[in-house]
Each structure stands twice: as structure tokens, then as C-alpha cells.
Image (cartoon, rainbow, N blue to C red; front, side, top):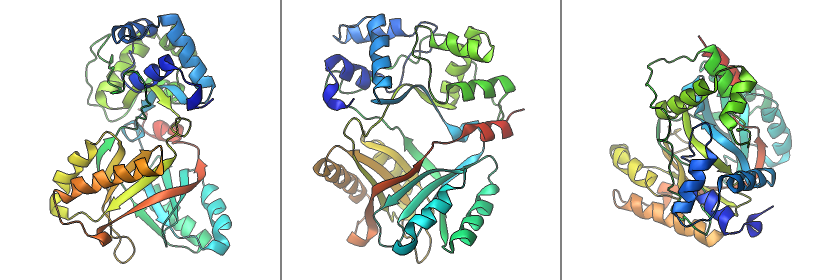
Length: 351
């Protein structure tokens, strides 16, 4: 199934609910009502069936909660390294053999062509892991941990109804009390692991999760609502497979932003709706001069170039951007993509 198979109702659902899906016991009813108020003729049963079909057809990676792994426990970091052409496959296989490596991409760069993400339960494990990879491959790693996050909002809208993608029903249901705990409880740990790969696409998905982990359905709803408010859950909704929607141009733009304007540049670049990730990361003298990352996605080379140019224009409002002050690294191959394993990180932070 791909974008050509989507009708107007499918497109409305994709646009409307990439975040803000209701966390109530029967969520499809208020969700369908919200679509009807926007002129989309769909009832709760049809909405459920369409989301199930989108999920099973590969248009969605999953339906449910997008967990903020950083808030659950442990840490993650982006790492870049060089793999010589004659040893490329060998080095990539060595990196990927480490279970802590969650994602790995080949990117267009004259030297740093391998980019991977490590996810660990204990932050002190990161330098140990990178030392192991260096010893095994004979290649230097360059750790680029996130220093500041300006945006993580990976929404991929399609042409069709509700083009703004702004249906937000996350306010429905209980009003959760914010907690100041850094750790999670054993029951919360079980909930995180139960929902990390998606919710069951059934009439009462939260009750189904409650039955799975042996908890009260109202507790599941209240806890997920609180996690959403506290930031442990970034959003609840349909999480699309952006490749299936035609977003094949994945450009990581990197910038050598003067330190004294990062505070101004970050929020402005993050406000561009096509920027899905936006971070400040460290430079590496003599190897990597860039301290600002903004990820863009496009459905064509022309769209991608136009979006990157828009980022450059925002940058130029704040400083004199030279040709050597930025670059775009397009991904050429997905080398590994298993997702962030939350079990170890959640276990280490359960009290």
C-alpha cells in the first residue's frame, strides 16, 4: 500500500491525527466527531477500520503513543565515523552487531559517511561502547550528543483535507496531576513496554493494554494522559511511515552557527513546520565544524531543496551565512533501524 492507494478520508485521518488522538476509553467516537466537524463524513467504526487498514498496509509504522525515551531513563547519542570504501561493509556489520546501536545510516559526506545512534541504560556506557567500536574497527568515532533540543515533531502531512494537521483532542479525559519523580514505578515500566510498539487497533485500545498488563483501565488512561503532560509521551496518534507517503528526500542540514545567536536561531528554525528535528550538538575541532542540526524531509528533490533554502534564509536573518558555514547530508542507505530499545533503559530507571 502506498500514497496512491489513499482516498480523501484516509488523507484526512493521516493529517488530523499525527498527534492529539484522545486518551479516553472509547477514543474513536470523539475522534470521528472531530473529523465530522471538519467536513469529513466518517463514523467511529469506519475510522477504526481505516486506521487498521493503514496500519496493516504499511502506511503507518504504528498507531499509538510515541514514547520520549530520554524521559523514561538512560541516554542516547548520535555518532559519526568514517568507513573506508574497501572496508565499508565489514565496519558497518561490526557497528550493527552492537545491540545498543538503534539506527545507522550512510550519509553523503566526503569523510564522515556512517552515522549511527546509540541507546544505553547508563550514560557512562556510551564512551565504553565507542571505545569498543574503535578498537574493533580501527576507526575513530565522533560523539555528537544532544546539547539542546529545539524541536522533535516528525509529522508528515499529505495533500488532502485538514492540511494543517491540527486536530488535537489530547485535552479530553482526566486532568492528571504532574509528578516530580525522575524514576518510574514497576507498573509504569510495564505500561511503557506494552505501548512502545503501538496500541491495539480495537474499539477500546487502552482497556486492551490494561488487560495485557493486569492493571485497571482507568489507571492506564490516567497514566498515559499524565505521561503526555509530563513529556514522557511526545504524542498519541497515527505514526506514519514517511517513505510510504513519498517523503524520500531525507536531508540533515548542519550549520556552524555563531554561539551567541544559537538561542535566537534555534526556536525560529524549529518553528518551520517541515523541520522534524532540530538540535544543538558539539563541534569536533579539525573534523566537524558544525554545532546546529536541522532535519528536513521532502517528497521530491525540488521540494527538499526549497525547504533547505528556507532554513538558510532564516539563518541569514541572524548572521552572515557563508558557503562553508553549512552543509546538507542526504541519507543514501539505511544500514540498521531497530528503534530505541526501552526495556533496559526503563528497567534501570524503575524504582
